[in-house]
Image 1 (cartoon, rainbow, N blue to C red):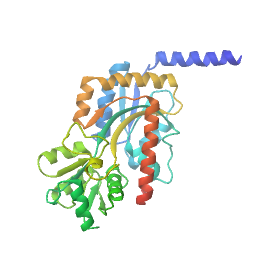
Image 2: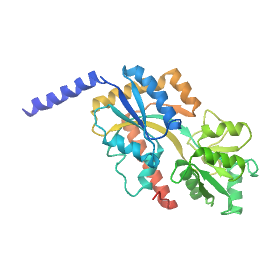
Image 3: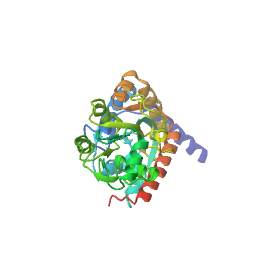
Image 4: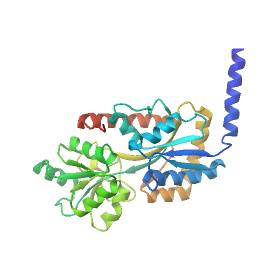
Length: 316
C-alpha cells in the first residue's frame, strides 16, 4: 500500500508538471509601478507569458521596505500560480527587522537568479576627488563632515555606504531620503557630497558631468561603464555589493513545477529582446539552478546581517 501511495503521489506530481500552467500566473513585485523592480518584473513577465502560454500578471505590492509583498507571496497557495520577484531588500530585511512574518529561506523555494547589477560610488563634481583612494583620504581628513545620501534607512544604498564606512575606516554621515530620486537630486545640487546609487540611475548624470562616478560595487567591472574600476580594485579590497533579481515561489510548491519554471526562465533570459531591455536597465541577464540561487541567497543574508549588526542599523 505504501508503495502504491508513493507511486500515486509521483504520478500526480508528474501530471501536475505536464499540465501546468492552466491559468494566469501572478508575479508579486514588492515595489511601486515604475520602480526598477517593477520594470524588470514586467520585462520578464511579458516573455515568460509567451514561453508558458499563459499570462503572467505583475502584482505591485509596495510597502514596509518590501516586506508586504514578501509576506503576501509567502502565504500564497504553493501551486505555482503565485511567484515572487526577490531583491536584496529581502536579504537585508532579515537582519534589519527584529520580527518578520516570513522567513526568506524557510518560506520560499528558490527558482532562479535572473540578473546581476551594480551600485556605484558617486560624488558631487565639486569634491576634489577622482578616485576611491582620494575619497578615502579626504573622508579621513574631514571625518564626520562628508554626507552620503541614500534611498532610505535600511535601503541597499544605505547599507552600501555603511559597509564602505566599515571597510574603508571612514565616517561618512548617512542622510536618508524617501527614494533614490530625491537623494540624487540633492547630490547633483551639492546638498550632499556622496551617494551609492544604482549604476543605471547614475549613468545619465555622470555622462552629463553633473556627478562623478568613481567605481562600481560588484565583483567585476560593469559592461555598461567598463572604464570604472570596482571598489575592491580601487582601494577597498573585498568590497562587494550587488544589485540582483531572482524568482521564488512559496516553499511547498511541487519540485516538478519549480523545474519547469526554471527551464522556461532560462529560455526567457536568453531571448534577445529581454537581454536588450534589461541591459538598458543596467542588469546583466542570467539564469541559474534553484540550488545555486538558494546558496546565493544565504550568502547575501549572511553579508547583510553582519553589516546591519556592525553598523547598529535598525528599521524599527
